[in-house]
Image (tube, rainbow, N blue to C red; front, side):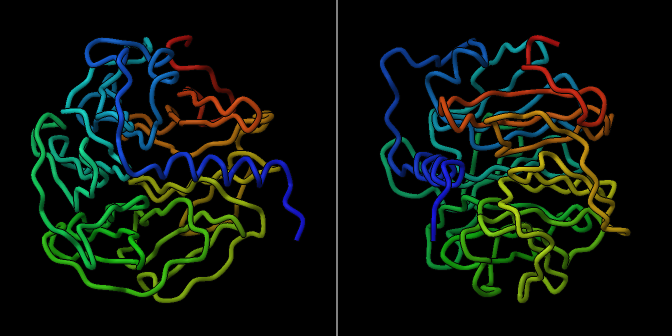
Amino acid sequence: MKITRTRHALLAAIAAAAVGTLYASPSFSAGDTSIAKLSKETHFHGISVDPADSARIYLATHHGLYVMGTDGKAQLLSEVRDYMGFTAHPTDATILFASGHPAGGGNLGFIVSKDGGRSWTKLSNGIGGPVDFHQMDVSKADPRVIYGVYETLQRSDDGGTTWKTVGAPPADIISLAASGIDVNTLYAATQSGLQRSTDGGRTWKKESDQTATMVQATNDGTVYAFMIGTGLVRAAEKNPAWQVVGKGFGEEYMLHFAADPRDPKRLYAITYNSRTRAESVIASRDGGERWTPLGAE
C-alpha cells in the first residue's frame, strides 16, 4: 500500500506523541509563559474549557497541566509530568481526569484531580496497568462511566475506581469520544476512518473512509471530527448527517478539540502542521467556520 505524505506525517506525529519518558529542557517554562513559547518546548496532548469559567482553558502537555486564557498566556498548574490522556468532568468544574507518565518514567495509571488540576491522586491501575491511556473520555450522559484505551478498550462504571475490559479498540485509533446523550455510544477517529459504536465499544461501524485525526462529543449531543482532505465536520447525534463547518486548514490538521459548555459557538483546537511539525492552539468564535491562533483573536 502506498503511504501518502500526509499519512506518513500523521504516523510521525503519533510516534512523537507516544514518547514514554519525560525530559524537561533546561529552558522549560515552569511558570508564567505563552502558548507560542510552549509550542516550541513541549507536546500538547489535550484541551478543555473550564465549565465554570470560560476564560480558563486547560492545556495538558508533555510537561504538566497548564491553564491559559484567550490572550494566549499560560500558567503551570500541576507538577511537571506527562499527561498523555486528559479529560474534564462534564459538569463538575473541580474534577479532571488524566493518565500518562511521571517525570521519572513509568505509567501514572488513572488519576483524578478534585481541585482544578493542582493536585492529583491515583484512582486505579486499570486493567494490565498501571495504564497509560492515550485515548480516554468521560460519558456526558453519565459521568460515572469512563472509557480508556490501553492495549484493550476499558470501561469504568464507578468514576474510575474499578475497570473491566470491553474488547479490542478499533485498529490505529487516534482519538476516542464518549457520546453526549447515550452512555453506550462511542466514536473513534482512526487512520482508516471515523467509526461509531452503539454497544459500549464491543462492535464498531464505519462512518467514513477518510483518515480522521480527532473526534469529540459535546454535552448537548453534537459530535465534531476532523477528516484529512475534508476539514472539520459536525453532526447532531440524534441525526448523524455530517456537515463540513471548517475548511482551509492546508497542511494542518486537528489532534484535540474542546467546545465551551457556556457558548457552543466558541471552540478551541490543537493543530499539527504536517510540513513543519509545529503545534498550535487555535480558537473559533463562530462555531468553527473561521479560526485564529489563540492570543490573536
